[in-house]
Amino acid sequence: MNAPPRHLRLLEEVRARQSATVEQLADTLGVTLQTVRRDVQRLAEAGLLMRFHGGVRVPSSTVENLAHTQREALHAAGKARIAQAVAQQVPHGCSLILNIGTTTEAVARALLQHRGLRVITNHLNVAAILSSNPDCEVIVAGGVVRATDRGIVGESAVDFMRQFKVDIAVIGISGIEADGSLRDYDYREVKVAQTIIEHAREVWLAADHSKFHRPALVQLATLAQIDRLFTDAPPPEPFPALLHEAQVACTVAG
Image 1 (cartoon, rainbow, N blue to C red):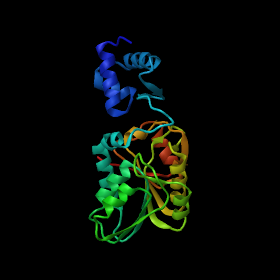
Image 2 (cartoon, rainbow, N blue to C red):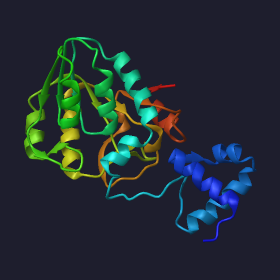
Image 3 (cartoon, one colour):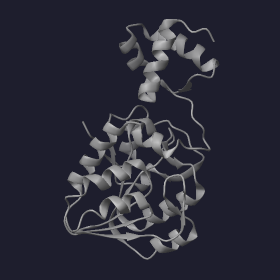
Image 4 (cartoon, rainbow, N blue to C red):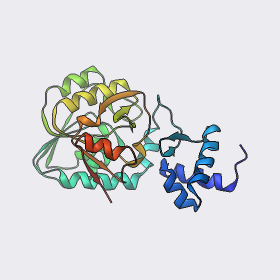
C-alpha cells in the first residue's frame, strides 16, 4: 500500500512497542481516537497490523517464534528491569527452577550475586550464566538440546523435572492471550514447563509488555496457575481484571 506519513509513523510506533493501545497511539501522534481507529482499520486490512480489543500489535506467527538472537535484543532493557525485580524478591538459600527463554537468561544474570542457591534448569544458556556464581549449585536437565536456543526439551526433561519440588519456579512464555492463557510454540517445551509448574511451591511469570495479546500455538497454563507476574509496563486491558480475578500479584519494574 502507498502509506501516508501518519500511517508510517503509526507503524513505526507499534513496531517499536510490539503492541499499543489506541489511546497511546493517539497521544503519541497527536491525533484523535477516531483518526487512529480509521488508520488502524486500513493498516489491518493491508495485513500490516493485527487488531485486538482496544489496540493493535505487530503481526506474528502462531506457529514459529522469533530467532533467539532477535528475542535477545528485543526489549532487552525491559527484560533487565524485570530480572532485577525478580532477583530482589528471590531469597538467598532457596531452590529455583528457571525454564527456557531470554527473560530467564536475564534473571540468571541478575542472580549472580545471590548466595546458597540451588537452581535447576532445562536451558544451557541459564546454566552457563549461573555457573559463574561459585555459591550457586546448578543442576541441568537431560534431554534433547534444541539447536535454535540451547533449550532442553523432550520426555527425558519432563521425567527429570518430576524428581524435584522447588521453592520458586521462574518461567518465561511467548504470549499471554486475552482469555488469560499462557502460550508458547514448541509442544515439547510446553510439556517441560507444565511439569515445572506442577513441581514448584510458587510460580513466578517473567514477561515483558510485548507478550500481552501475542498469540502462540500451544497453551502452557493459565494466569490462575501462577502466583506472581513481573513485567516492565502496566498490563493493558483486559489483563488488570484477569490478574485480580486470578489473585496474581503484579510487579511492574519501572
